[in-house]
Structure formats: C-alpha cells, structure tokens
Amino acid sequence: MIFVCTDMSAGRQPGGARSLWLLLCTVGGPQCVFRGYGCGGGLPCLCLSFSSFYRRAKCFPPCQCGISVENKCASVGYEDLDGTVDYINRFTLEGGNPFLKHEKIHSLELMGAWRQFFAQVAYTYKKDPIMYIARPSGNDGEVKLITKDNLAEVQGLQAFVGGQFKAGIWQPRVNVGIMKQWLTIDYSDARKSMGKPVALVQLQNAIHLPYDIWMNVDRQWMSARNDDNTYQEQSSYLNAKLYKAFSTTVSVLPLRPMTYSTKATAT
Image (cartoon, rainbow, N blue to C red; front, side):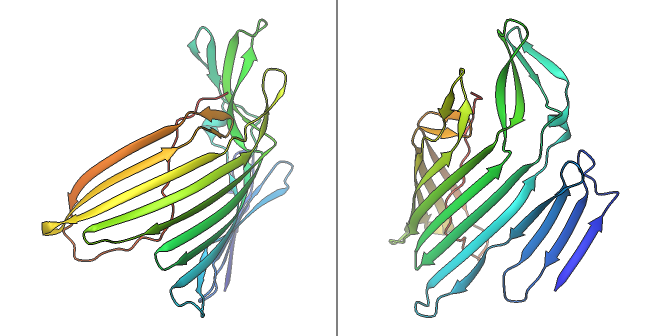
C-alpha cells in the first residue's frame, strides 16, 4: 500500500525548499518512509528511509537477523543560518552561516542475535556534513569566529558484539565495539586526518534484590579518539542506582549497544 502526500507551498524548508512525503506499507514486511526536500535551484534532495526488519532463520529457531537502510536529510535550523555575530570575548566571536546546505546521510546497518548474544555492523556516509569550525576574523587573524560549515564528506564504520547473561540474582550484560571515521580537514595550512578509531567497552550489572528491588551498576570506558573534527581524550564513567519495580509486567529490550555522548571542542 502506497500513500503520497505533497505540499508545494505550505511545507517549505529554509531556502524555499519543497516537501514531499511518501509512505510505503507492506503487511508482514519492511516499512519504507520516503521524504524529500528541494535543494537549491529547485532540484530535489530525496530522503529514503527503510525501517529495520527482522526475519527468523529456520535452521536456528533462536536466531534473528535484520538489515536497516536509511537515506535522510538533516535540515538546517534557522538559528544556524542567522548571519548575526555575537561577541564572546576579545579573541572569540560566534555566528551563523547563511550559506549552510542540508546534510545528506546514507547508512547501512546489519544486525544479528543468537540466544543471548548479538552482533551489529553499521556503515554511514555523510555528504556536506555540518560541523563547528573556527576561522580567522579581522586583518591580523588573532580573533577567531566560531561558526558551522559544510565539509565535503565523512564516512564511518562501527562494529559491536555483546551478550546478556544470568547467574542467580545477577544479570550482567557486556558490549564491546570499535568505531572508525574517515575525515580529512584543513589545519594550519595543511591537511590533517581525523581518523583515530575508538574502542568502547560497556559492562552493565543488574542485581535483583528481595522485595522486587533492583540495583544497577554500569561501567563504560572509551579510548582516545577523533569525533567529527575534534579530538577526545580517553574517558570512562561509573553509574549506580537503586530502584523498586511496582509493575508485574516486564519489558524485554532488544540487545543493542548503549548510546553515549561526548563533549566536543571545535578544532
């Protein structure tokens, strides 16, 4: 079943772009969401997104596998297009970039799970990625203007394996992965590679105490790495919490890696 909805006047994006939505629904199969924006000169920038779907292998009943294909546009916010320059200090200014283009993202993800183990491999390609940069401002170049700009492209690859176990009241979960990007930037009148990979180890511990009380102790470690056009030092954290469940319904989450956040500083 296919549904098409287009708005040539009201649904405009920044820069007079047109919007198009197309939804493809297949009973018992993958779902497809199709969305497009007009990008400069009235040319369409189409965004195609397949939601991940799973099919059980007949030879191994507890085995699951899936594939996710996504093609989307990250639209530019109006605040990023504002050309107003703000004063931060005597050496730093901050402002928008009215020439920013939409970021196009293409990704392919393969997933598999067998019993309590899982594996995931994902590849991402970004065209015109939007990143913070610092460029000289003024005649002497001592003042830096922090703004957003489009780089040519960046590619990324990540792979994770892990498992979830149970030993009495202790339910540990382990995730191990590596992430690598391919990006080259201009730095001090030269070209610099920002492709240092990152290793990630996560250990989650859930302990089921009496009276339906749960204690969670989570530990994560990340190696030094490049994240977009920044360099991040080695980092780790330890989280602990104690809570009580009041519902008898237990929701089983899919075996997927934990998300993480980093604080970046523009290079």
